Image 1 (cartoon, rainbow, N blue to C red):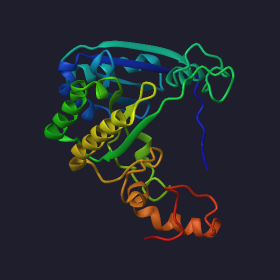
Image 2: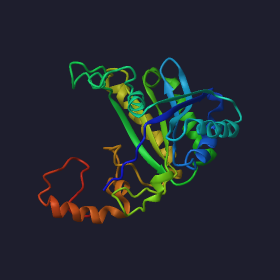
Image 3: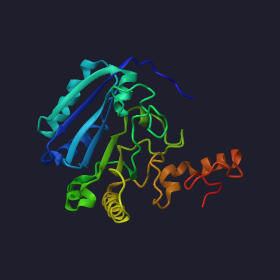
Image 4: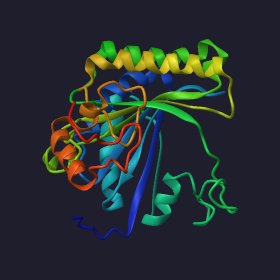
Length: 279
């Protein structure tokens, strides 16, 4: 059962700093983002971008009176200790959704993959990704490993020609008001969610793919000491061992019972679909 909320407009914001401030931004955001008020969601993005290099930025959405956002962004700037480049734009909800989907200026039909519609303007992008939930800040040692991994993508062309890094999405707020056993998702008390990723710029050979897989797995392993052990089911990871517990935690047994009740013959299945028995 869902309860909807009337919302006519939202404010999209973006902040960016030079890479030299990345450690300060990461430390500040881990304290600021998850503790923001419910109308404020943000993502801290640490990415290698081809032809640009390592970048650090914070973007997000404010779903309240536009004038109330500035003080919160000022707070983050003060915590970092360096004024960022910054933009704030208030838009109707649907226009904001189009912007966040990479469809600014497109019609609804154009905001589709080129493979889905003759009018579609969005190219299909190949990517590989992993995910982790964090119940606490990752600490300086782990943070330094993360920043070194992103910066290190400049070491070879196989890495530098593809975008890669980590997106840290703030949780808390309304998410944390739902108990861990009220839905299938157990990570209600997480501070933030990390998506470690590589997005490929066109076709690439087996060697380049292997190098990027190795980089991604290395980054994931570097972050594991600070992660909670849970992963996000919406970021399916074919390499993840123990994925049943990582996705569903203590909710797994009840979900398996639902599966046995409504799909005992396992008609609805894929490589990481709910099993019919707990192993």
